[in-house]
Image (tube, rainbow, N blue to C red; front, side, top):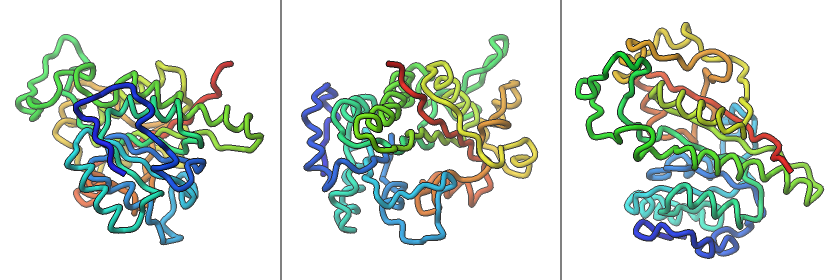
Length: 285
Protein backbone atom coordinates (compact mmCIF):
# COMPACT_ATOMS: atom_id res chain seq x y z
CA UNK A 1 0.00 0.00 0.00
CA UNK A 2 1.40 3.39 -0.96
CA UNK A 3 -0.45 6.65 -0.45
CA UNK A 4 1.54 9.77 -1.26
CA UNK A 5 0.02 12.95 0.13
CA UNK A 6 3.14 15.10 0.22
CA UNK A 7 1.51 17.90 -1.78
CA UNK A 8 -1.92 17.67 -0.17
CA UNK A 9 -1.69 17.63 3.63
CA UNK A 10 -5.42 17.54 4.14
CA UNK A 11 -7.55 16.08 6.90
CA UNK A 12 -9.20 13.46 4.68
CA UNK A 13 -9.35 10.45 6.98
CA UNK A 14 -11.22 8.52 4.27
CA UNK A 15 -7.94 7.92 2.44
CA UNK A 16 -7.01 5.37 5.10
CA UNK A 17 -9.20 2.38 4.35
CA UNK A 18 -7.78 0.14 7.03
CA UNK A 19 -9.47 -3.04 5.81
CA UNK A 20 -7.65 -2.57 2.50
CA UNK A 21 -4.31 -1.74 4.07
CA UNK A 22 -4.24 -4.63 6.56
CA UNK A 23 -5.65 -8.16 6.40
CA UNK A 24 -6.89 -7.77 9.97
CA UNK A 25 -7.13 -4.14 11.14
CA UNK A 26 -8.28 -5.24 14.59
CA UNK A 27 -4.73 -6.33 15.42
CA UNK A 28 -2.52 -4.08 17.56
CA UNK A 29 -0.67 -1.45 15.54
CA UNK A 30 2.97 -0.36 15.77
CA UNK A 31 3.60 3.06 14.22
CA UNK A 32 7.05 4.36 13.26
CA UNK A 33 6.88 8.13 12.78
CA UNK A 34 9.58 9.44 10.46
CA UNK A 35 10.44 5.89 9.42
CA UNK A 36 12.81 6.82 6.59
CA UNK A 37 13.56 3.74 4.50
CA UNK A 38 11.59 1.54 6.89
CA UNK A 39 14.51 -0.45 8.28
CA UNK A 40 13.11 -0.70 11.82
CA UNK A 41 9.62 -1.90 10.84
CA UNK A 42 10.93 -4.23 8.15
CA UNK A 43 12.97 -5.86 10.88
CA UNK A 44 10.16 -5.97 13.44
CA UNK A 45 7.69 -7.40 10.91
CA UNK A 46 10.05 -10.30 10.13
CA UNK A 47 11.22 -11.28 13.60
CA UNK A 48 11.95 -15.00 13.58
CA UNK A 49 14.59 -15.35 16.29
CA UNK A 50 12.92 -16.25 19.63
CA UNK A 51 15.99 -14.97 21.50
CA UNK A 52 15.78 -11.54 19.86
CA UNK A 53 13.25 -10.09 22.27
CA UNK A 54 12.20 -6.59 23.17
CA UNK A 55 13.41 -5.10 26.44
CA UNK A 56 9.73 -4.33 26.95
CA UNK A 57 9.05 -8.09 26.78
CA UNK A 58 6.38 -7.58 24.15
CA UNK A 59 5.23 -10.16 21.63
CA UNK A 60 5.05 -8.25 18.35
CA UNK A 61 4.21 -11.27 16.21
CA UNK A 62 0.50 -10.46 16.17
CA UNK A 63 0.85 -6.79 15.26
CA UNK A 64 0.31 -4.69 12.18
CA UNK A 65 3.06 -2.20 11.32
CA UNK A 66 2.69 1.26 9.80
CA UNK A 67 5.55 3.58 8.86
CA UNK A 68 5.17 7.22 7.85
CA UNK A 69 7.62 9.68 6.36
CA UNK A 70 7.45 12.82 4.21
CA UNK A 71 9.95 11.41 1.72
CA UNK A 72 8.14 9.73 -1.16
CA UNK A 73 11.46 8.26 -2.28
CA UNK A 74 12.08 6.58 1.08
CA UNK A 75 8.49 5.34 1.32
CA UNK A 76 8.63 3.93 -2.21
CA UNK A 77 11.80 2.03 -1.35
CA UNK A 78 10.32 0.67 1.89
CA UNK A 79 7.14 -0.49 0.16
CA UNK A 80 9.11 -2.21 -2.59
CA UNK A 81 11.06 -4.20 0.00
CA UNK A 82 7.88 -5.03 1.93
CA UNK A 83 6.25 -6.32 -1.26
CA UNK A 84 9.31 -8.40 -2.15
CA UNK A 85 9.23 -9.96 1.30
CA UNK A 86 5.49 -10.72 1.00
CA UNK A 87 4.60 -8.55 3.98
CA UNK A 88 1.53 -6.96 2.38
CA UNK A 89 -1.47 -6.91 4.69
CA UNK A 90 0.79 -6.77 7.75
CA UNK A 91 3.21 -3.93 7.00
CA UNK A 92 2.51 -0.67 5.16
CA UNK A 93 4.35 2.59 4.54
CA UNK A 94 2.72 5.92 3.75
CA UNK A 95 4.04 9.32 2.70
CA UNK A 96 2.09 11.62 4.97
CA UNK A 97 2.42 14.29 7.60
CA UNK A 98 2.94 12.59 10.97
CA UNK A 99 0.30 14.58 12.85
CA UNK A 100 -2.34 13.97 10.17
CA UNK A 101 -1.55 10.26 10.24
CA UNK A 102 -2.08 10.23 14.01
CA UNK A 103 -5.43 11.92 13.54
CA UNK A 104 -6.44 9.26 11.03
CA UNK A 105 -5.44 6.46 13.40
CA UNK A 106 -7.24 8.13 16.30
CA UNK A 107 -10.43 8.59 14.30
CA UNK A 108 -10.65 5.35 12.36
CA UNK A 109 -8.20 2.57 13.20
CA UNK A 110 -10.39 -0.17 14.72
CA UNK A 111 -7.74 -1.92 16.82
CA UNK A 112 -5.47 -0.80 19.66
CA UNK A 113 -2.11 0.89 19.13
CA UNK A 114 0.70 -0.98 20.87
CA UNK A 115 3.59 1.38 20.22
CA UNK A 116 4.41 4.71 18.65
CA UNK A 117 8.10 4.97 17.77
CA UNK A 118 9.91 8.28 17.28
CA UNK A 119 13.46 7.27 16.51
CA UNK A 120 16.30 9.68 15.84
CA UNK A 121 14.26 12.56 14.39
CA UNK A 122 16.29 15.09 12.42
CA UNK A 123 17.20 17.64 15.10
CA UNK A 124 16.88 21.39 15.13
CA UNK A 125 19.73 23.83 15.66
CA UNK A 126 21.31 23.54 19.07
CA UNK A 127 19.85 26.04 21.52
CA UNK A 128 21.77 27.13 24.58
CA UNK A 129 20.18 26.19 27.93
CA UNK A 130 21.77 29.37 29.26
CA UNK A 131 20.27 32.57 27.75
CA UNK A 132 23.50 34.42 28.53
CA UNK A 133 25.60 32.10 26.35
CA UNK A 134 25.26 32.03 22.55
CA UNK A 135 25.74 28.90 20.45
CA UNK A 136 28.08 28.82 17.48
CA UNK A 137 25.98 26.54 15.28
CA UNK A 138 28.54 26.73 12.50
CA UNK A 139 31.08 24.90 14.64
CA UNK A 140 28.50 22.29 15.64
CA UNK A 141 27.40 21.73 12.03
CA UNK A 142 23.83 22.86 12.59
CA UNK A 143 23.38 25.59 9.99
CA UNK A 144 21.18 23.49 7.66
CA UNK A 145 18.83 22.34 10.40
CA UNK A 146 15.49 23.94 11.41
CA UNK A 147 16.15 27.10 13.38
CA UNK A 148 14.41 25.82 16.52
CA UNK A 149 12.28 23.04 17.97
CA UNK A 150 9.23 25.14 17.10
CA UNK A 151 10.24 25.56 13.47
CA UNK A 152 10.33 22.43 11.32
CA UNK A 153 11.11 19.80 13.97
CA UNK A 154 9.03 16.67 13.44
CA UNK A 155 8.24 15.84 17.06
CA UNK A 156 6.00 18.82 17.68
CA UNK A 157 3.86 19.27 20.76
CA UNK A 158 0.81 18.64 18.57
CA UNK A 159 2.23 15.34 17.33
CA UNK A 160 3.14 14.15 20.83
CA UNK A 161 -0.32 15.14 22.06
CA UNK A 162 -1.95 13.12 19.26
CA UNK A 163 0.32 10.19 20.11
CA UNK A 164 -0.86 10.35 23.71
CA UNK A 165 -4.49 10.40 22.64
CA UNK A 166 -3.97 7.50 20.23
CA UNK A 167 -2.24 5.37 22.86
CA UNK A 168 -4.69 6.33 25.58
CA UNK A 169 -7.57 5.08 23.43
CA UNK A 170 -6.51 1.51 24.29
CA UNK A 171 -8.14 1.88 27.69
CA UNK A 172 -11.42 2.90 26.08
CA UNK A 173 -11.28 -0.02 23.63
CA UNK A 174 -10.60 -2.38 26.52
CA UNK A 175 -13.77 -1.23 28.29
CA UNK A 176 -15.85 -1.34 25.10
CA UNK A 177 -14.67 -4.83 24.14
CA UNK A 178 -14.48 -6.06 27.75
CA UNK A 179 -11.07 -7.47 26.89
CA UNK A 180 -7.80 -6.64 28.65
CA UNK A 181 -5.65 -4.44 26.38
CA UNK A 182 -2.21 -3.28 27.44
CA UNK A 183 -1.75 0.51 27.52
CA UNK A 184 0.13 1.82 24.51
CA UNK A 185 3.73 2.99 24.74
CA UNK A 186 5.61 5.89 23.23
CA UNK A 187 9.29 5.14 22.58
CA UNK A 188 11.63 8.10 22.13
CA UNK A 189 15.19 7.65 20.87
CA UNK A 190 17.87 10.15 19.86
CA UNK A 191 21.65 10.37 19.75
CA UNK A 192 21.29 14.10 20.49
CA UNK A 193 21.02 14.44 24.25
CA UNK A 194 19.24 17.80 24.17
CA UNK A 195 16.66 16.52 21.65
CA UNK A 196 15.81 13.49 23.78
CA UNK A 197 15.41 15.71 26.83
CA UNK A 198 13.23 18.16 24.91
CA UNK A 199 10.85 15.45 23.68
CA UNK A 200 10.48 13.97 27.15
CA UNK A 201 9.88 17.40 28.70
CA UNK A 202 7.10 18.13 26.19
CA UNK A 203 5.46 14.81 27.04
CA UNK A 204 5.66 15.71 30.72
CA UNK A 205 4.00 19.07 30.08
CA UNK A 206 1.14 17.38 28.22
CA UNK A 207 0.35 15.19 31.25
CA UNK A 208 -0.79 12.34 28.96
CA UNK A 209 2.01 9.93 29.82
CA UNK A 210 3.75 8.19 32.67
CA UNK A 211 7.43 7.31 32.46
CA UNK A 212 8.27 3.60 32.33
CA UNK A 213 11.24 2.85 34.54
CA UNK A 214 13.87 0.47 33.14
CA UNK A 215 15.60 -2.20 35.18
CA UNK A 216 18.86 -0.29 34.77
CA UNK A 217 18.89 3.47 34.22
CA UNK A 218 21.37 5.34 32.09
CA UNK A 219 24.01 6.94 34.29
CA UNK A 220 27.00 9.21 33.90
CA UNK A 221 29.19 6.16 34.49
CA UNK A 222 27.42 4.00 31.89
CA UNK A 223 27.92 6.58 29.12
CA UNK A 224 31.28 7.80 30.34
CA UNK A 225 33.19 5.32 28.19
CA UNK A 226 31.19 6.20 25.07
CA UNK A 227 31.89 8.96 22.55
CA UNK A 228 29.13 11.60 22.44
CA UNK A 229 28.29 13.51 19.28
CA UNK A 230 29.84 16.95 18.85
CA UNK A 231 26.39 18.40 19.45
CA UNK A 232 26.09 16.60 22.78
CA UNK A 233 29.59 17.74 23.75
CA UNK A 234 28.53 21.33 23.11
CA UNK A 235 25.30 20.80 25.04
CA UNK A 236 27.23 19.51 28.05
CA UNK A 237 29.74 22.36 27.88
CA UNK A 238 26.85 24.83 27.86
CA UNK A 239 25.60 23.33 31.12
CA UNK A 240 22.65 21.46 29.66
CA UNK A 241 20.82 18.85 31.73
CA UNK A 242 21.74 15.21 31.20
CA UNK A 243 19.64 12.28 29.98
CA UNK A 244 20.57 10.12 32.94
CA UNK A 245 18.81 8.78 36.00
CA UNK A 246 15.18 7.72 36.39
CA UNK A 247 13.37 7.01 33.14
CA UNK A 248 16.43 6.89 30.90
CA UNK A 249 17.12 3.43 29.49
CA UNK A 250 20.69 2.15 29.37
CA UNK A 251 19.87 -0.75 27.02
CA UNK A 252 18.06 -0.96 23.67
CA UNK A 253 14.28 -0.89 23.79
CA UNK A 254 13.53 -2.84 20.61
CA UNK A 255 14.84 -6.22 19.47
CA UNK A 256 18.13 -6.07 17.54
CA UNK A 257 16.31 -6.84 14.31
CA UNK A 258 14.24 -3.69 14.78
CA UNK A 259 17.10 -1.25 15.25
CA UNK A 260 17.35 1.66 12.83
CA UNK A 261 20.45 2.32 10.74
CA UNK A 262 21.32 5.14 13.16
CA UNK A 263 21.08 2.96 16.26
CA UNK A 264 23.25 0.30 14.62
CA UNK A 265 25.82 2.96 13.69
CA UNK A 266 25.80 4.34 17.24
CA UNK A 267 26.42 0.86 18.62
CA UNK A 268 29.30 0.25 16.23
CA UNK A 269 30.84 3.68 16.85
CA UNK A 270 30.34 3.69 20.60
CA UNK A 271 28.01 6.70 20.53
CA UNK A 272 25.41 7.09 23.32
CA UNK A 273 21.75 6.61 22.47
CA UNK A 274 19.27 8.35 24.75
CA UNK A 275 16.09 6.33 25.21
CA UNK A 276 12.85 6.95 27.07
CA UNK A 277 9.63 4.93 27.21
CA UNK A 278 6.32 6.43 28.26
CA UNK A 279 2.97 4.77 28.76
CA UNK A 280 -0.36 6.46 28.13
CA UNK A 281 -2.35 7.55 31.16
CA UNK A 282 -5.99 6.63 31.56
CA UNK A 283 -7.91 9.29 29.59
CA UNK A 284 -10.31 11.45 31.54
CA UNK A 285 -14.00 10.86 30.94
